[in-house]
Image (cartoon, rainbow, N blue to C red; front, side):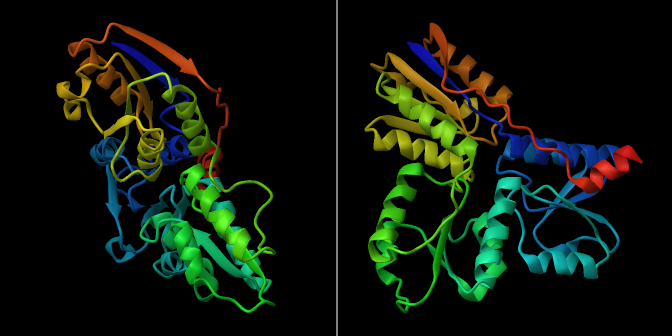
Length: 311
């Protein structure tokens, strides 16, 4: 068997920043540090940070008054920030800058009288936080068929935007349906699917035709990891999403010669390497790294941490 190991894979700049934020806060202030929601959707990352003293919570009522709280990379609703101020919490915002851009756009267009069509998974924490920026003006859709249920007055100004971690193909079909029904609908000049999600999907598409099976290393709760698996299946390839080497089954590789491997944006590289070692147990002989694009994006730590670091 031969493995085509795709790059870019694994951590994106937003995930690196979020993890570094928790680790730097623990270093500066000592444990415990409270984190609103999982900092990123990967159990290995979360478990490691728990061991270092991070406490993950969903409700700010579980954070003692006057404590420090970090917002996850997925962002939070405005009312969460209001509650944090009421509880006199030191807010450390690890929201990915690309998610923050969507929050700002939804708020801005709502204030200008637009109705917002938000494309994404209704129960995903990122979407819930974004929608709360303009709750009464926002309509969430998950698939092209949902466009049929949208009805607005012809004079109503419309704006659409997407969750950062969606499938490029899914968003195209939904946006096509939106433009067909609402020709004057507006959006941002550039896609709101993040660069890392886009790069990982396009890199996988480039190699999929040359392989028999695709392995995506990532957490089942990770949206972008799940979209990678779906992208492979859409190309009529056998595909599996695994979060550790123990989940890989030998039976998957009967009569398989060429394998592609990629990893979601919240997957640590050491997990990828463990999965490669497991494949060697199952007969893997050769590994070739396939580079689609080099990523050099870097996001600075939150300002509140930089102030303490530079003090």
